[in-house]
Image (cartoon, rainbow, N blue to C red; front, side, top):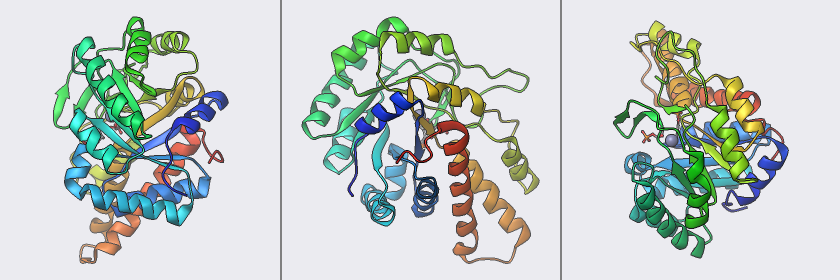
Amino acid sequence: MSLVTSTEMFRKAYDEGYAIGAFNVNNMEIVQGITEAALEENAPLILQVSAGARKYAKHVYLIKLVEAAIEDTQLPIVLHLDHGPDFETCKSCIDGGFSSVMIDGSEHPFKENIEVTKKVVEYAHAHGVVVEGELGQLAGVEDDVNVEEHSYTDPDQVQEFVEKTGVDSLAIAIGTSHGAYKFKPGQNPQLRFDILDEIARRLPGFPIVLHGSSSVIPELVAKINQYGGAMPDAIGIPEDMLRQAATGAVCKINIDSDLRLAMTATVREHFALHPADFDPRQYLGPARTAIKEMVQRKIRNVLGCSGKA
Ligand code: G3H
Ligand code: 13P
Ligand code: ZN
């Protein structure tokens, strides 16, 4: 088994009313935790790498880790560039063995977004790689940039964008956001299902992607703070809303922050309970297990892709 693209995965997910989890990877324990969960659940999987992850771990290490995960599990796995900022980064990932890239032109005006996305699609498709584009802007923190307000995707633009660019999937903004602070305390988390439904009506059968879909489990934030953390009130997207989206046109759901929280809570707890430990395996092992349990929870509660590999 080698890397696969998401084409068949999304077709099946769309038809059968579930979504594929796209989880961010930065090191070996994260790759192992995620893939162990997918193996136990027999679930299809997208492992995604941000520009920051490539800078942190180096492209070659991440590629080899994902290749090792495929050899180890024999699962269908997509290796995807998350939030590709420009053509050059996308090209480097396409040339370097990824099976899927995102070109995030969402901060550009519509016309320029089409131009850069089309350029990536032409290069990617010539190399057997699929492309995710984005229309609309999520609020939240991404690559140290803090966007205060959502700029919801305009359903009037989606058909033209997909036709002119040739993208294989489309990320949209309906109220999800990056990071752990998606809503303010006292706010009632809501997603704009009216916009999602209208986009699905305009693009029948076309796979939609949701970024910023961590649920920020309150017990994890409480555990981090119990063991010396100082996180302010953090609120995410309720899992039942994401589950609802996954039964419709949403075929890919991006989750990173929930894995970071699970890992951090576990490491903090470990050092609070075992302050004399200094062997990294003693705390990275439990952190890997925490990632596995979180991914299993997502596969069951949010994605509905158990048994679909
Ligand atoms: O949406 C962004 C992902 O959570 C990746 O975050 O850029 O800090 O690696 P990063
Ligand atoms: P979260 O910060 O909600 O986990 O979103 C991750 C994401 O969208 C990666 O592209
Ligand atoms: Zn994202």
